[in-house]
Length: 456
Image 1: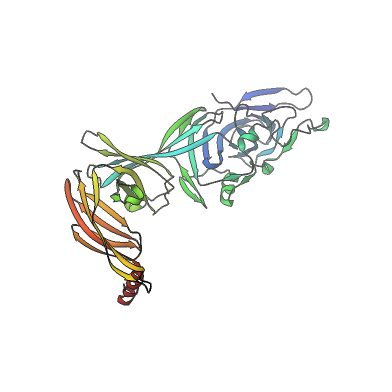
Image 2: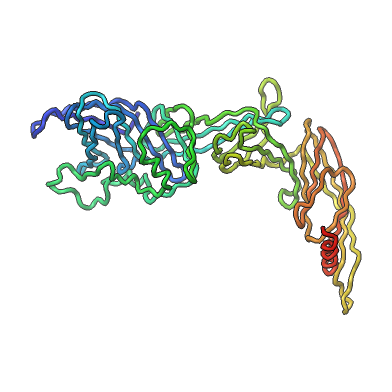
């Protein structure tokens, strides 16, 4: 049941003995919700059909038991604007949760209007499901948004738009909604000469005293309907969920934002003891661009759960999950799916020795070399190939390395890190060795000079 009550009061005669008919306003024709998640702020745009008569009309709007900010109420005719004048919005004295619009009409009949206001209590959270094919080369990516409504108002057949980005406000909308008097401090009540109560024109309504970017302010102020699905708003991004859904107060509703098949992905297994311990960690990456059948819009941050198809019957096996931040267009994201038990790396220190000691004038050791021999055994127990990246971090930037065996591709990652990249066949085992020589004291200085002379 909707909590907001809207009545149309048609004045048939003037004077103290005026007869007043109360007519319930028809239900919303359309409603659009623009949810600024980071600020607990939602802009609501309602389209309704008012039945007016020529002359003065009064429209009563009640927001009892809701989190609507009454100072943000605004109304605009969507047709016959030159014949309809929204004179002002009055808050009657000593009456809570009630506003009264004064409308002057040159015509009789139904007039479509748009009512806008700000409310609190609506929020959204994005989450995703990725289903890998059996060969794990592509993934079906499904995006969802869970909208939660604790605003006190039901919204039927609502179009939902999400703002990705932070919004800062001076007033909290929920606090404004609970004020005894919506127009400021509850100190001075209007006097006898102000029987109509305090008045605010629609142009001067505060809209919750927002501190938004100029583009967002423009979005709030511009009341014409938009035909935009997705649009960039400066540092904010407007994301529209296709279709409409009824979102009742006290409930959450899952809305599908997109469903894209055959997104090309890269599976990469990483081993780095200093970062991940003795485990191999699986990473999944894809790019938000047209080549990957995405790229029409940034992707809001959320949780992605990844599954793998295992047969033609559609059965799935759980692979892992990862949180990610907002993905701009043409940007790549790498998701950490956690430890993998089916790719194993076992490094072993086979030998350690020191040599090439140097002494200073007092016969103290001033330089030496340390030589370590490592053996790495690598296993892929999966039934598909796996790409593995092994990083080895060294305690100094002065080092040389000698490699032997099936070590794949090798590169010096940075001053103290070496990287091996291997392409493992299904259900395979391989091993390789490397001899690491590190230089210390004056031996490090000599090594650095030699490297400089050789241009390395």
